Image (cartoon, rainbow, N blue to C red; front, side, top):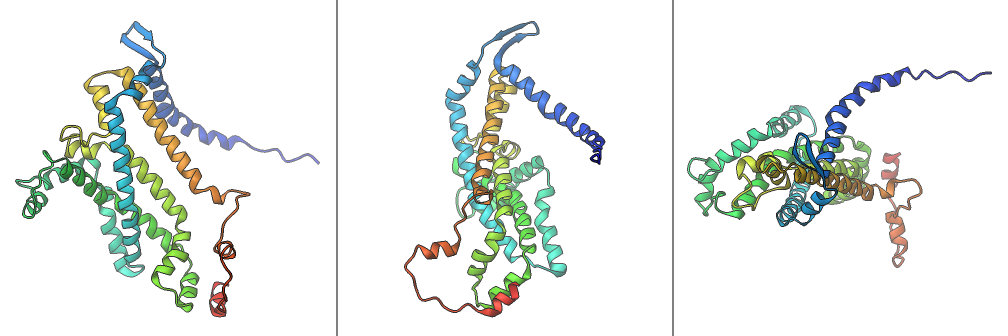
Length: 318
């Protein structure tokens, strides 16, 4: 009997997506790659320079300094926003109208456009008319136009206010998906709140936290609008990110070749780092991977007298 013939017409539904991706990503990327390999001096005057622009980008001290600032800023953002988002998600109401109200309040910063956030914080932190700037000046001297420390802290606080709600909502959704049976078993065994978080919630939130880490790293490493509006990259170049420097080279200096090479290296670094980060976090979930469980860890330690396990918690989990 002949096998049933497959109908592959449904693949035509993918064509619109292919065209959209081609015109919005692939073709512009090819154009940038073309610019990075040629010194374009006119419509009919182009000189092939090979990898010269890439070498200039790799050895430019301004780009190196901006790269260090970006890495430092991203690490500080992750160290602040991930724990803070987890804390806020755990203390939020879980049901009733209070839960709905809390979700709405937490989500408000996310719906504000980036340029509006920067403008709002620029006015809010002014030392003469801004409420935040005036209040801080009552305790210590504050001027983000002159102090590198003040400008850096302002960007950190602004980004934390704007994007911590994203982490909070992701973690909150992950917590709500954990079956109540685990909490009931932990309560029967008399587990503390810290033990519940460590052994029940944290393992279940692994994938959610991985998504939050990747999203916040990529967004913070590409940060442009907020620091540009608030500080303009200053004082001096103390808050100049890679995105601001790239815009200055491409538009301010109109150095298309260097800007093209810079863009490709910027893009590839984010993609490669995100891929490696994702790969490391998912190593123990791949087929054939050896998982080290708490039981395996106990085997490597000196044997101690084990306490009887509460049978009620086993029944709850079943």
